[in-house]
Image (cartoon, rainbow, N blue to C red):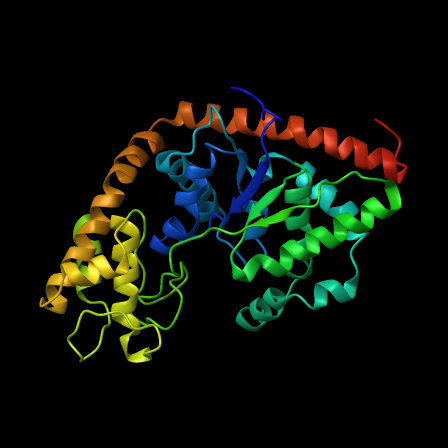
Length: 338
């Protein structure tokens, strides 16, 4: 398995192993991770260190790390051309995060919107890790001198902080870090909850029919779509300015993304048909899309030796690249070489 090739731009991205990825994660990010392998040197990580800012059940977390890693392989991440590793297998992330925290201002972290949001949701556990989380994110990116980081609207602020930290460090010690740029995915419309279509689909939604898991069985997927919230207008049309149409707008966006048809083509296809027919068609399209992923996942998760080898190889390749960066950083700040 080869190292990154250096003749392509580098992309870094990570996913937390907290619950199974849902339809919105797949269409909005993970599907694009697979496509980006053709054009970029990609480094992808299951970021388990980030997950523990919220209390986790240790045995469940271990299981979810393996499941998330296996799912990425099943979706088409190719370990022959892409570095795929578990963050916790590379201690250099935590080591660089400490150094970078000494180049990060308290005021910068206190302005992070995500810290404020998570503090409200987890008021019983407002820990220091939750506060310094963006510094670890910066270390994730800067360790590999990533050129691009795929980001959604909720992560842009963190990427800007990573650039600010890198600029500050470079200003003191020379051009050590590449300044990462946002990779904006031209995409799929935001996928909303099936139960509350004015809210984004979430892995942590407690309503059982609100989200579609990548590993949901076919019958479960179709049942959830049949129960999805729509409206009383009984007209399959798209109007983003009409909040009453939020449910049908969401279903049209999903159908469009899954079938590669335009919204207008989807509307035309179901002209004169009822919501029941349309919901069934969306559910079947999603189930068909996930079937090969689920079959490949079942094969991979059962092959413990293959998984262990992939994880070890990915970690070794990640450590090789990040080791060069960390040694350079340690030298610049004045640490003795060991």
